[in-house]
Length: 85
Image (cartoon, rainbow, N blue to C red):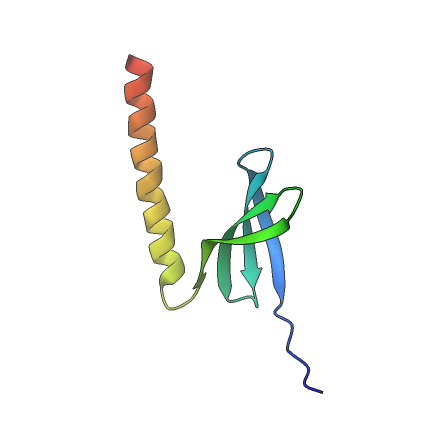
């Protein structure tokens, strides 16, 4: 009988997107970040295929933070323009 190694996954944060969906951030084996949509419905509760996972090392985390900063800058500019209207 072969035993499959269980992947260590630790949830680090959750954002409610709707009554039926959350965006969940998890650390996988202390080396990967997993951002995934979780759903709650009558027929299924759990993770979907919608999301992504990447290694935190090899400069990926630094590049991801730069990307988030660009998104934040774009968001702030849109918010500023909307507040002028």
